[in-house]
Image (cartoon, rainbow, N blue to C red; front, side, top):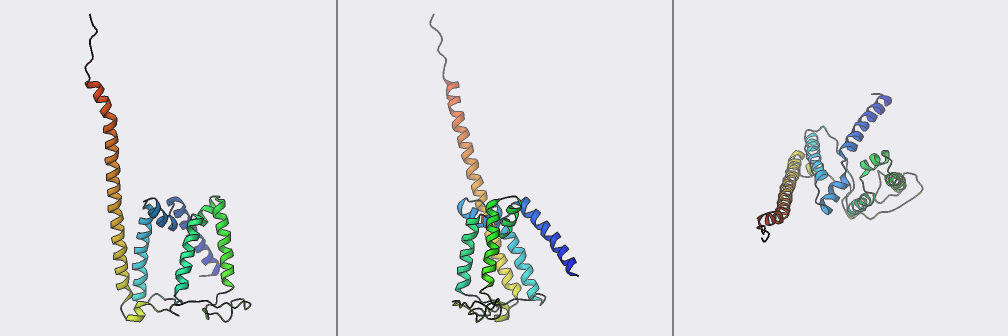
Length: 224
């Protein structure tokens, strides 16, 4: 496919994804934030379904040799980076995808978050080297030399490569765990709905009780 054709396909695909995200109001940040703070699991269930599908699909391709795994350095720096990224998502009120959608809707806060996303990407490019980081003897620009503390595994291998067990086995295990979490959420939502319904019925009975008491009181006849 020509570069122009690839751009057209990417534009169409991105437009479809943007419309779906905008109409469904899906957000990775809301999937975790709403579940923890507001006991709302609408986005959480959608995220779990997506993770199950992607996990099975990805590990299937890896198992049959169609996928190409990319090895990254994994360590405490990864954990710290993910933690900071999560804080940023909550403060911005949206994940990266939702930030694009909200910017298109005219949200000024999302626009600032998107601008500084690109600023952060540019600053990160100054210290990153695909071949030598960490530590990086030379940056991509060749001007800055930053050594990073990793405390982890360099060029980390996959479990399939390390143990010789097909990736689909681990994928099915992970999908099973995600499915159990999904079912637990459904049970919790059912219990919440039952409690809410019981509370509504109790309030209705309390409102109806005074009216019933008044109707049951005998009306005194006027004295002759």
